[in-house]
Length: 233
Image (cartoon, rainbow, N blue to C red):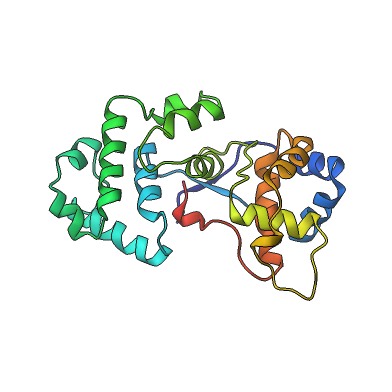
């Protein structure tokens, strides 16, 4: 029985070799963390993926999962079509636990899926990363970070660097900075985005792989820093 996940299509051995040769400190992290094991979710449409991303925002995973299950149950145990979501009475969505702000975001997502702003999977696979980010961030409630997670975890794009992600920033600090051993990690130790972007230039075209390993740096330090794959695109 499969969970619907599939391996990435890019060459992991080539990516890790490039990252190790271009940045020996990152190479030591790669050697310590072990094989790259990211698997892509493949069972949902783009609309369904973004619907779940909106529901999970700013909520604990278990709470968001419960809301999602109640919402799907109200539509007959399946993801609604965009047209059905737009036609659903607000009381139905509220009864599932969806907040007013997220109701507005879900309705905007449905409308922009119908009018083609949110493309089909077949079309989006031919679009460059920045065009995807530009298109999808016009949807209410969808920011750059959400689209970057979709690019990495759903579309399997190899060169995405979500510099605003807390786990990425912490993993960068743990890997490249001399942190005081006498202090617990706090926000003052997070690196400047500009410095992260400059260092990551040498990681191209494999910044998604580098990002995955920066999340693993958080795991190795004792606290999970990567997004919950089940809640991502």
